[in-house]
Length: 306
Image (cartoon, rainbow, N blue to C red; front, side):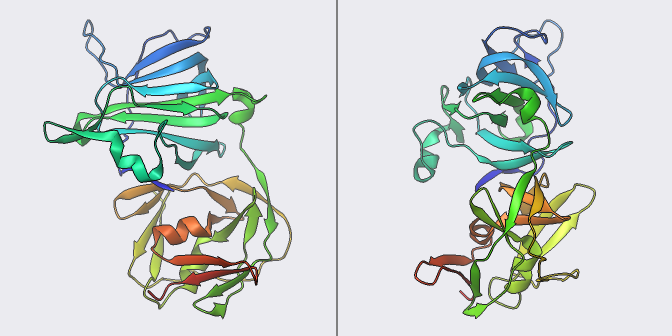
């Protein structure tokens, strides 16, 4: 899980592309996120390698590329990130932010250096996309100055733009994991997807309600976004901690952005029967709740008392 960007920072941008819109052989494209006046020279923020054409994904214009793809900063930027997505049909579901080549979570801050009072990413900083999928590259100047946002459909390993842009339904198997919340066993309608266990967001909020790490969940119907408010009581909507029916379900990646305060977070999530499910560790990390695993008893432990 990684913070993505401030709400509203990545507004719709007009992109000036260095190549025509028709299909072409693998090329490197430079991207300028500004709508330039006629005759005004472009000033690029990002470069994208191995571009072979263009397509549309969830209503957004995107480059088609062949893996591996290098995304590089070609100017000093305040925000430089690549986020992976899955197709949810008419929307995209964020799966997390990639780390630049040679960096780890611990050395993330080393990307930046001070330039005239602003922390900026140095020119040449690069992400290499090695796996097929849908990605968003973002290269932004300080908030009001704008920048570039571009979507990429990266082909490879037999996956094509056509297959990658279809809704990515996956099988969700009922989880039998035992869960202790503050020492008390709680039954969750949880599912295993791709080797990870996913829990219903509102179930987790209900389970820790009344403790030091209580949080509320609200849905912004206009923005189609989930908002989490820490340090406040959970307001139930009905159906929390209801028992599941024990059957396998079809899960679709959730395209709803998740906010805590003004920060948007990229966390893999799925929608099952109209409810949103997250990895327990991702959700607990975001809400500062301790989660652990007792291998001897095969039990998940959650501590929201501290």
